[in-house]
Image 1 (cartoon, one colour):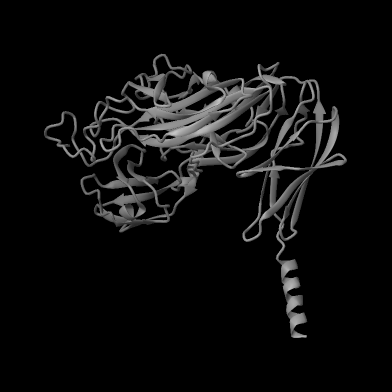
Image 2 (spheres, rainbow, N blue to C red):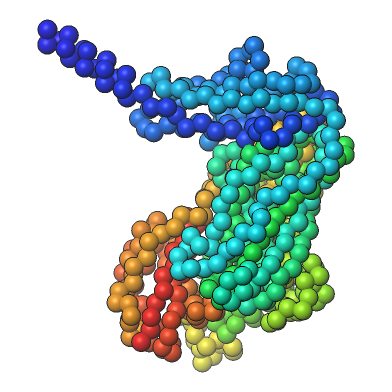
Length: 523
């Protein structure tokens, strides 16, 4: 009797432990699936369930047939070749090991004829800093055309306007980026942008290389490092131009996406080596290298990295393969964004105020069918002598260095992709050894005492990683910067800003996982 009762309890408990999994797909009913001839289309899906339960299978019922999706790291996919043009009923189901099931349905119309189309995504989005790190971001889900071989060009128009808020347009040039979420959940940059000084401008850029990601229902996010002296209003439209592309399929593989110190005497070449494979079947392949240099002034050498003309190298198997001269002419402005305030005419390392920082492109076609080690080697002759890791740093003897400990040192923001194209289907992939981080976690940040006479400590939920702490004025001008190797170093540090004038400042923390900001009142 007791054993039967125990078994019944177990069965009941098992039945009630079923949890319906989360299931999404990029496949959308908002647009027809356009293909001049019937070819495979990659359907991407995501399925997950809370532990200890797991996903047992993801299946697709297409018309009267049932197929099993292929599982990859972080996503599922299925190559669907429509049997004919017209309407097709698709049911996608995810089932857990405990029997929980979620099903979503799509009716997809496959058409042979296509025409150019304009698509609106961001529409008058306002980004204004209101005191917390989240206010620097915008997230949104938008639907885009889905096709194989129907469009030969995708142009994006970014409209930047002064919002109707206190301060209007921000007075300063702010680093910004627009990213979309890849099938595995990683965010991939499609546009890097630096805002103008105090005015709005329009920009057009070719994003055809990102066609594989600009399909169906996708998530966008925008970041602008604005600090409360106004803000920005953004709109982003896409023009899909009908035409026969050179290749029906393309893919984007992210190699690096991180900030790297430049000229640190303890680590002059900080970018990790990554092993890249360009398999047979790919017909064209390129490196897309997006690098911009930041920081300058009397606490680093030669105004690096923003105003230092550097020559970097991309090495394949320890042999120099490509040379990058990282320098942009800013007058005339690359995007015709003139009449700005500030120093917009000065040339800079990979960017200009009021323009899209377009990547440098290098041909990898000679390496198709091979795998190789890829290195990104910074300007080898540069050393930041005014760096705290320079044991010989002495303000009295190093020309132009007024503070060896105030870490406003040069760094590069590096984002590198491999773009591949083929007439055969290509599936999204992440190379082995490549670390991808969402970079958008928002940490809590406590400062005590606050207000302060200058000395204070901080506490935060920040993840353990190398972390930069910046001190900014209320206008967003950086006045101090510090670097910490671990969370323990950060939490145990005794901050002292008593050399600054009294007023309102912002403390900003950032590492590869996310960021935090907090207002500080200095008495």
